[in-house]
Length: 147
Length: 143
Image 1: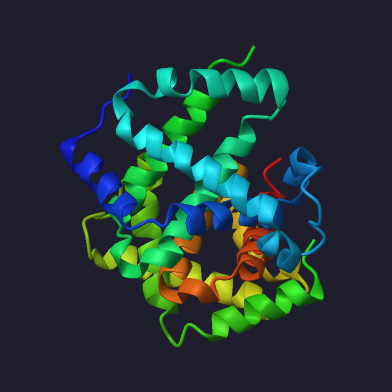
Image 2 (image 1 turned 90 degrees about the horizontal axis):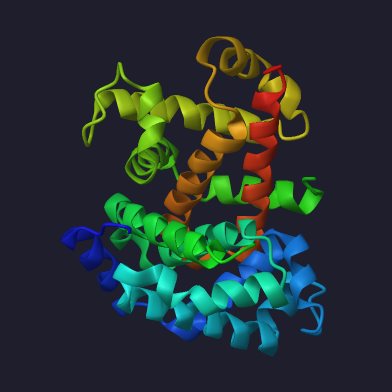
């Protein structure tokens, strides 16, 4: 089980309180599809992904981004049981969606960059460290049920 | 592969930093040591406490190398040739696809905190590709 210090929990929830889940989620997913274009393979039914502008404006991308980041919110409420929280989603990503877990790491890093661009100097090194740990642990939990 | 547009975006972005480059170098290293503690194993001879002169100095070196790379973006292999030798034969930092990836992430976070919305998806993509290219060149002589 992952150990979270009181400081880490505070850094995580402090940042989360400032996050617009819909905006940041949409932005993070759009950037994943732009910066790592091969990830578009999982979204072939999303319509127009032909350019960064198209991706950023795509309503399915926005909606899915919001879904993904909303689930992060659940993780933050359940830091002491991430494997349990993500158990069903892990099975889904393996058995139905066939997503290589490496992509969870990529999305996590992108989310950290999105937070940095929104929070500026407030996103201190210790803040970043707590969030890098969180995205790493979430990625691990999502990969846990793979077989 | 870096397109002409990527190169333009990178040069423009670097130009927007207004002299903050050195600070950014130190900050990227500080963030890296904080988020990825194993990276500290390469600096047992450094004082890694906040505001350390050694970290500032090293950050400055790293950024100067990146500046050179950006100025010679059409020929990274040649521009970084000596650094490539240094990393392969002397420093032997863990294969760049691991450690440099951490430095790339932290550099991008440092840039994003300063540039905000100007660290657009297109700029983000170009910088990520650029840092990948730098890592590849530095790894060329490893074996």
